[in-house]
Length: 186
View 1 (cartoon, rainbow, N blue to C red):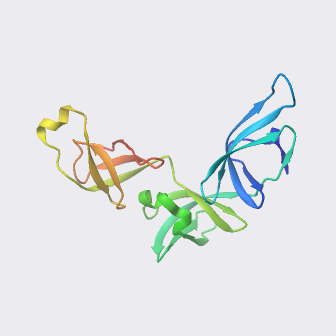
View 2: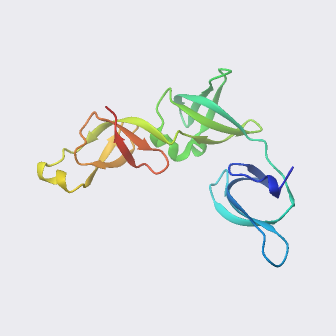
View 3: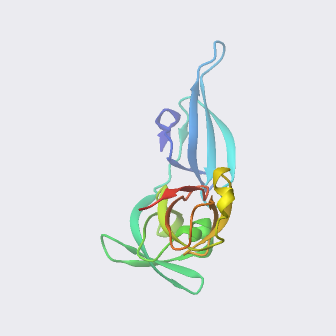
């Protein structure tokens, strides 16, 4: 149990037997009336975001979420096998939990895996990853000055937009949050 004064970004709350992560919060002390805390909560399992207001000093139930650095090993049917880098325990994680992160996940890559009572909740990749472009159309000579983009397929199978000068077999840095191109790797 914690009070609304203990709220911070990333804290996971247990409200009505559902897990909610605090995305942002704001303590409000109006000139008239009692203080309150305005929060934006994200459902851990579904990703739905809601606004919720708590009275100041109210107790809220926190959930014990264990975040561990794990290494992605291989894919087995509809499960992704991750290994705890400290204990070498291997756990299967379903497609639903991995979600869109699958587009940027390579074997032997590290990721943060959050679990609650032994059940995996979500997989968190680093902010950016380095991937190889396996196929992209060649850029035309006259197009290079305009700063346009073209589609490119990554080694994971994901497709992103890259500048026209990027060629096949180029290593690029990709933002895992929105799939945007961040730059070339020399």
